[in-house]
Length: 221
Image 1: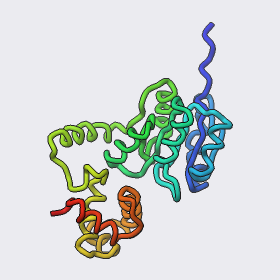
Image 2 (image 1 turned 90 degrees about the vertical axis):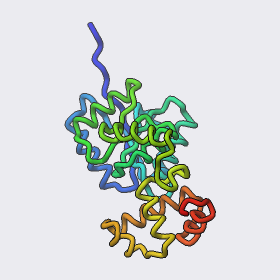
Image 3 (image 1 turned 120 degrees about the vertical axis):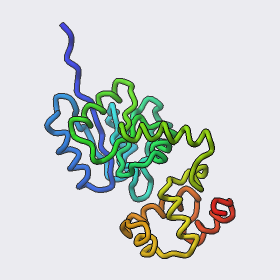
Image 4 (image 1 turned 30 degrees about the vertical axis):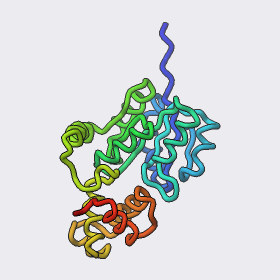
């Protein structure tokens, strides 16, 4: 008689307790397939939790205050190359997917995912597969081809996403956060979030230094 397959053991990581509770509620109806065995608020607290519980999969937000999900994934994989990490994101952008794969993530899924699909992806990752949002995966193939043909936006080779490139170009022209938000029809907080990502990638701390780096690197002609 075949032994029953045990549930996937998962640790949840986010910097907001409300998000963690939401994920737990999503997974609760599937306890015969997925078991949340631990949680951590912020990447800084996650390593010790993961080390003590040895989960099958770590399900982690990609963007957090302080260390990011990318940083955490890299750290966890350095400690244990077999550790599987799925990054959750609101960013439907293939450049974030490429960053996730570069640090060794086993998956990149969007936060709007349905609960039953999330459970299925967790099971696939435990078995050794890679979980990628289907629509994003299709665009990533096209993006890879365009990179090979050198057909891309300014800053792509420095790791900027297309939206980050748009925002940085407007920073260079002198627009304020509010002006950028109005021009691109996005929220002020979205602009600030993208700017923080740009600063991190360029190793700078403010918009003036980011603009100077863009001009020095010849990103915008």
